[in-house]
Image (cartoon, rainbow over all chains, first blue to last red; front, side, top):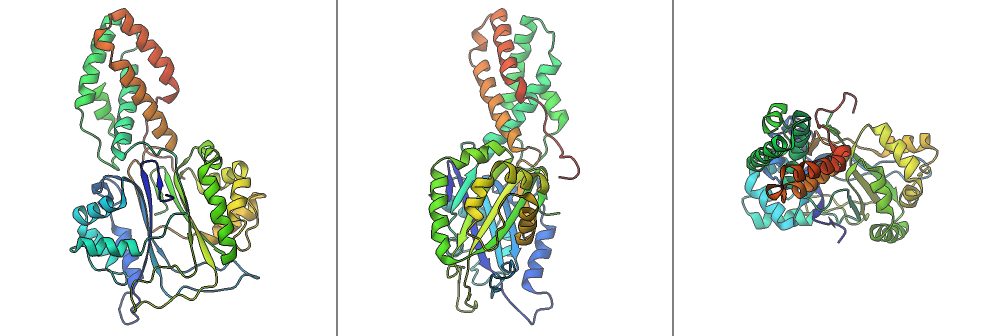
Length: 207
Length: 197
């Protein structure tokens, strides 16, 4: 299936945005204002849906006219594009969105036509699937590792580098003892939070 | 700028295609997905995730009667990419490494000038690109090469650690040296991206 590459799912959703000529702020602009203020790093709502590798929300105003001799045409609606790359299957992901970031989902998609809200999870999933466009070709450079495995690997890489630097020139017995201690601390270390930069102090402490 | 989060850039591009050409592109993308071209994408090694999505002119989602019906002649090809580096580096690399593959994909879009020479290609991409309003990246401090290197280090470390409690100190030192040799190209710290990406 083109939506999937290994263990990663490529979700593409186009949700038509409401058109309200009588509102003081048009729905598409209100949506853009909301998205501009949404946290992008550790406090991002998508960090809570922790199977998300990358996600984007885009207001697509219109199709593009590329010039003569192509025909000029326009969309009747603006569309909210949701592009997400996540671990696992679509149903689980949508259920996690509904359970873990319901306020964000409501605040974003309330600007879209026909959005039923997330309180009724079945209706929400049906709506999202109705707006889904099948991915024709999906490429994932690393498609066999989860977000958590990647965060753990990045943490390990940094910690190992610091360990190697710290223990240059140690005798075999000192090195073996230090390594055993290092592995014990590394295995007990909490998993880094998604979208958080790993602190240098934390890595040094592990080494 | 919302196109950028940490070391990743989110690109969106939309191009019109005559509907009869769509089927040719679908067939080509199906073949690419099965075989060779992904290896060219992997060669670039700065794309985390990318996708091409064909939206047929009659298949823009219509979710209720209150939504006006679209009246389009063209199908649309939408390209999404999550890559590391600058826009210029990306398009340059695409043009240099993947021109044949990109020509095969975008040739069916109206007024596509070809991936080579690069100047009209860049002009075209700039014309059809649209901006990202919100961009999330679970590991913004890491490039795709960092991710792959980190997984290699983790795998090598696990192999070193498993038998290490049962080794003598000298045996461990020898294994540790082999480990260092194996991972030396994959070490280093990730961190904040340089200004300008």
